[in-house]
Amino acid sequence: MIPVTRPYFPSREKLNKYIDGIYERQWLTNNGVLVQELTRRLESYLRVENLLLVANGTLALQVAYRVLGIADDTKINQPEAITTPFTFIATASSLKWERITPVFVDIDPYTWCMDPGNIAAAITPNTKAIVPVHVFGNACDVEAIDAIASKHNLKVIYDASHAFGVKYKGESLLKHGDAATLSFHATKLFHTGEGGAIIFKCKEDLERARKMINFGITGPETIEELGINAKMNELQAAMGLCVLDEVEENLAVRANVWHRYEQALADCVQLQAKPDALDYNHAYFPVVFNSEAQAVQVAATLKEHGVMARRYFYPSLESVECLGAKADQTASQVIASRILCLPIFDRLSLDDQQSIINLIEMELKA
Image 1 (cartoon, rainbow, N blue to C red):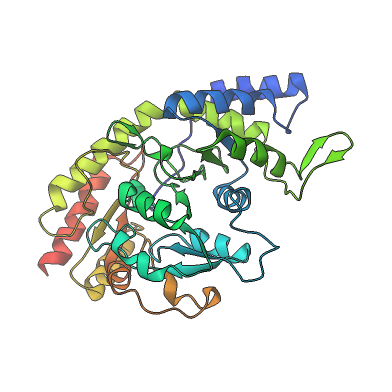
Image 2 (cartoon, one colour):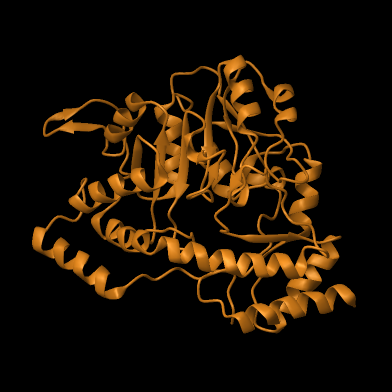
């Protein structure tokens, strides 16, 4: 079986050394030395400031909403946040969980990111934030979104779960917005097994978040505000340090896989449009077919031959009942119904990749 992705496993010898250190120090959590080291190294590697490690990517979003005042229990009217329906469920469910109403606006049919032209009409007196997604690591139109947010005094939290290491116009894509969140889930190209991070624009927000992820505790007998347990532990950080040591090799292998797919399939499927100024991380290889029936058939054929391709992201989130009834978002519906993400990971052999390409070409010619 060829899965759509496999976790990257770094050097076991190196990981063992980090674990030996954990045993020697007897320090497992609460901002341990490995969490501190990973924080410093990630800020350096990503060229960002004010990075906070947390237990997972969903908590990263929830903490960001709290710190930036979007999830505020004192508000009389339920706050709203404008977001995209073409994303993983956690983007919207984390809003709902924090009692923030997700308001969906449609995507650009070529970049698959939120279309800024749809935002203004969705703003109401209850709108507190915009939560765009750098879909598959592709940059949103950050200039347009930031301009709209500034005009209407809205916070911007970018769900950048797929955008590890991505640069836009020569700088980290993670520098945009009041906050950007990352997921370090096992399936991501950089991971800590489970984990995540928040990059804040303002140091004051970072310092408040530090308290918030530790129950609001600031001292042995001091609790300053409502908090939660969202800390990353030392075992997660050990994995992250090992993966970070080898991340350039991982990126290079993924890029090779990505470009082989592109060369073979670009003329027969729709690929995601990206800005010229984007330095991409090749985290995913999504393709859009001419119809939903064609996408479903290709997925079925691949599965028959032991290949798992994922309908990622499907369904379009405005159709998910637990998020509340929403108006259809046409472009998102179309892309979600026709998309497949093809297998891409560091151990995908050239022969296996060629077999996948051959199966897709066979179905498209049928």
